[in-house]
Image (cartoon, rainbow, N blue to C red):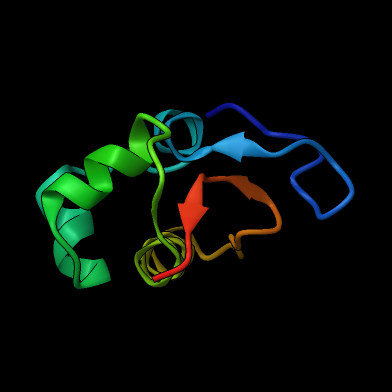
Length: 83
């Protein structure tokens, strides 16, 4: 497994797609279910299209739970807009 260095508030931000490829390869239905959102929203997050802030937080909370690591809007490059 690849190691991502510097995934802190002061280091580089990685996209959800990059994290998915190197940390935990989830399916769209799996993430949508865990994050209580739609597959379309998860897909938009993966291709870096803006998604509602609430959904972004849900996705990152679910990804954190899956990996046992902490992922937030401060350390993941995830375009958002306010709901």
